[in-house]
Image (tube, rainbow, N blue to C red):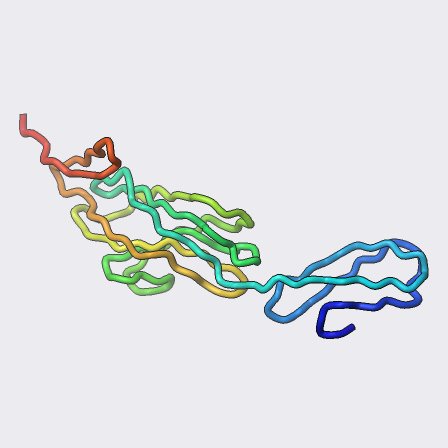
Amino acid sequence: SNTNGIFNLYNIPAGTHELTFVKEGYITIKHEITVDGQKTTFVEAFMEISFPTVLTGETTEIKQSIATFHGNILDIGGSPITAYGHVWSVLKYPEIGDTLTDTTNNGTTTNIGEFSNRVDSLEVDTKYYIRAYAINSEGLSYGNELSFFTLAPGKESIINKSGKTFFRKLSNK
């Protein structure tokens, strides 16, 4: 083999063989080839693994202790996502494992696209900071930070036609 990814294979017995190509920092690519015992040249291209790209979406359905978080995996980074979800805190720039931080974990995926988490353990009338996150073999990526307030007792949220959330005090009637 050489550094250009061209491999010359000689004296391979007839049959089907699985070949695995590994290059550090790149995706491992496996191919199954059939040979007839003659010289075979195989060309392989490697795809570099990078951090996933994730976007934090707006928080919706905000109540006193409940909210729905949204996110979007824009790029998996060439390697399967091993964990993704949301991280939130009363402190700015929440990170997984920080004090006063909570996390959801939606599991693994090899797909891009939107996801959401409904959380029902929030404190009443509290400002939270939230970020979506995704982890692959290259590492951990966070989305943009957004903030929201849970409702105070006696208030409700209203979403207008443009999708903006407003709050109003409930009548005492």
